[in-house]
Amino acid sequence: MKLDPLVAGAGAGLLAALLLAPATGDALGRLADARAEQAQLVTAVAEAKRPASALVTPGLAVADALALAVRIRERAKAGGVLVEQAEPLGSDRLALVRLRLSGPEKSVIAMIDALEREAPLVRLQWQLTALPGGGVRLSGEAVAARR
Figure 1 (cartoon, rainbow, N blue to C red):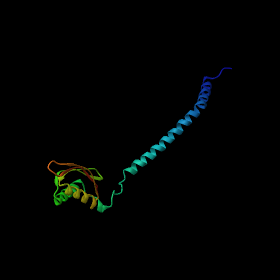
Figure 2 (figure 1 turned 180 degrees about the vertical axis):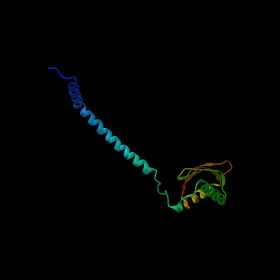
Figure 3 (figure 1 turned 135 degrees about the vertical axis):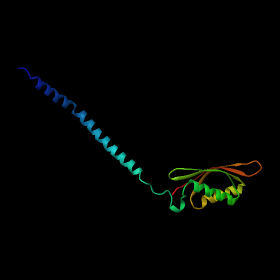
Figure 4 (figure 1 turned 90 degrees about the vertical axis):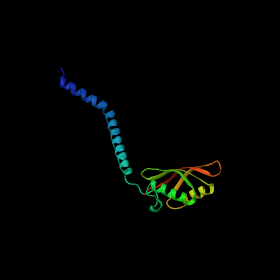
């Protein structure tokens, strides 16, 4: 008896499907896992784009880097410190001022101490170097949270 080619092809196809079923099921399971992970990542990115809460309480933040630079200049003038550079920089949430100050050591130290102690909240990263003929030069950066 001779098999019909259609029956033989259908039988071979069923046999191939049975042999490939474990690999296909595994691949579909991995695809479902990858889609679930992608959905979690999309959710995490959407949450990251939400406006975050303030870095500090409102009374301790500055308007922007320019306002911080103005405050530094006012403090320096009141303390007898020369402002050689007060370059406002910054980002969305931080006000940054690159600064260079010079004057008598006590005046410079008192000025940066007052900046860090008083509101708004300002932190400094600085380095002091002695100047010929007396006095010191402070080079560094002041950073504060923006409103």
